[in-house]
Image 1 (cartoon, rainbow, N blue to C red):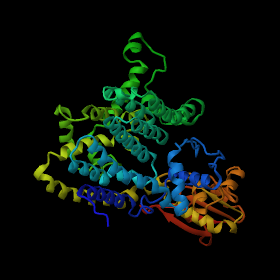
Image 2: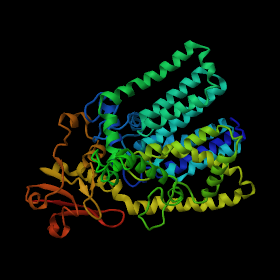
Image 3: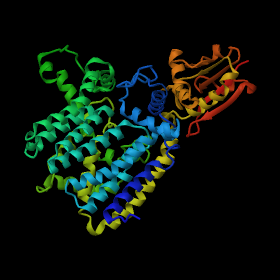
Image 4: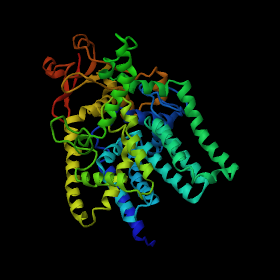
Length: 533
């Protein structure tokens, strides 16, 4: 039997805790596969079966999906769990959950590499293992979780390469950082800036790379092999450009309505209130909002409506250690890698601030490492109060559990496309019994404000042949996906109608033709199933 030392036992505990927080009831929570998740699953399944995505593209460098051009890494990584476990909720979420758990261990090793004590490094890994921000997004297939993993692992290998004066470690670290740019959109801005910072900040320690030109050319070649295709995708395909334009700050209506578009009423307006100034001011406001303590500790995850008790990115008890850590970051002149921490603290939210959404916690996930640094610094100052901290932390974890498993599904199940699995499974069993099944793509508990992609759920749960779907013009035989027009569609022969309560009023349906009514988690009617004569 292999005997583990205390350090190895600590790492195992951190990983075990992280696995539990991410894998427990993984198939059931979140309460439904999101549109992104089911799309990732379908494309991975299609690649596995045919070598092509749902649009018929062979081993693509990006996935068009529903027009949002998904980065390829998560899709390709999801092929293996689908091969092992079949096409299911668990297999689609497996990559994010496993990578999320592994991130906790990599954080421990990174903190240790940066000079933190072993006990502090283990705390940092444990802190990530149970952190609400990271746990929340690790339990669904979010590319940001995978991209963060590659950034942290790449940085760890890079720092080891500097310490060991190894060309190959530096090159491998660069490869991992390059992969992060293939994984999520935010890293396409953050990672190049991070690499530039690393090269400038550690330039004295990097002088050894020029001593062996052959090794230098090899490691540079590795990275060019990954970056050249990304440059091609950026310049000669609509993938990155389309995504950037769809989420750009320039689409923010609160900004657009104030822009002059080059038409100024006076010279003073041109000088003091021009469009460049307005855009910068709008960006600066969004950027500074990410430093709002309410976002950090009380409502950053948006698990409840405004006015209700919420859940922040961190537990409230972390307020003390994070603020103490930030103070130490500013005043401790002997702190190792201080400039790196400062860089991350100020640059971390830039990518998110350049998009049209306010305080977008997913796009800002790349910011997480700096809070690990500061929380770890603060933890070193707790000394005798650590028992008090962990005692309050237990209450915070229980509160987070209630928020995540009860409140969040209750208030926001419809935004996770809840009910579409039920629709798909019903279609799988009954589509041969009807001439046609019409399924709405618009729904909502308060109004028809949500648009879904129900076809993707039918593909997923019925395990439709990907090749047949593509060859049939991306259509599923016998099923139409559009809003139900009750006045006309109810007169069709032998047709099943599945609409929202805004499409079909159950009171208008003859009792014998009303198949069933499903509800969202908040108890409000979601979908009405009927059949015609």
